[in-house]
Length: 303
Image 1: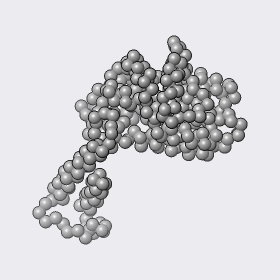
Image 2: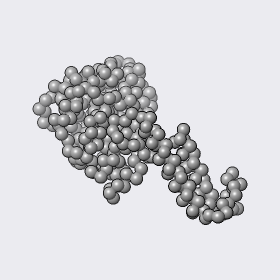
Image 3: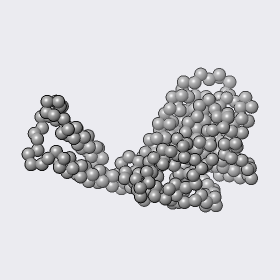
Image 4: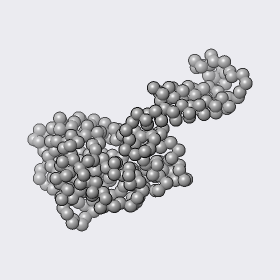
């Protein structure tokens, strides 16, 4: 309720600013009936209102934080990360855009000054909203497909940061600002505790209802099959056609490995109608599938 009130004040403030910038004869909105403040200038009024709004939003965000169970002691801010987007002079929002559009490649860690920005993006609601947009488009596409009715249509799903989230791990390892540690990460994987990514699961269940068979294709290795199956089932996944894991010791890029596995599916007579992942290496390399979908992931890069 407090956040809603603050938002309403923001709208009112914007209207007041717009009104103060127009001549009396040019602006005829409802607020034109309000009296002009007698002792302060428009600029001073806006500044004072903005300060009060800032306090209201801070209070509302604190209330929301207190009522939420977060896995990291970060307070959600407005937008993706408030002023953290420019912390230490690094334009973290622009950096994330370059990552998601595949303009920035071969990076090894998130910039150290962007740890808070990435953390707030992942935990503050923006990440879920971005994922929802991707999945909404994927579902709309799937619902429009005309299936052959022979059970040969499949949809490829990545696992990490696509079907399951490793955010509990990254929240305690600098949100990607620390170099990748295979030992500690694999220990986390073997716990089998990765939570579901609800938007991806929504797509998964929709596809099954449409008669499209999900296939998991992951960079996890074959020796992690049992715990991966257990983790997926714990989080509500069932009914997939196949789970394809990387052979232990295989020396190949992610693109070469995953495109090779998709080629095997195609050679076996399956039609890959869709392909979704968080890394560009999940969806690049022929055959990609009839249509690909890229989920957000500013935590790490796999080439």
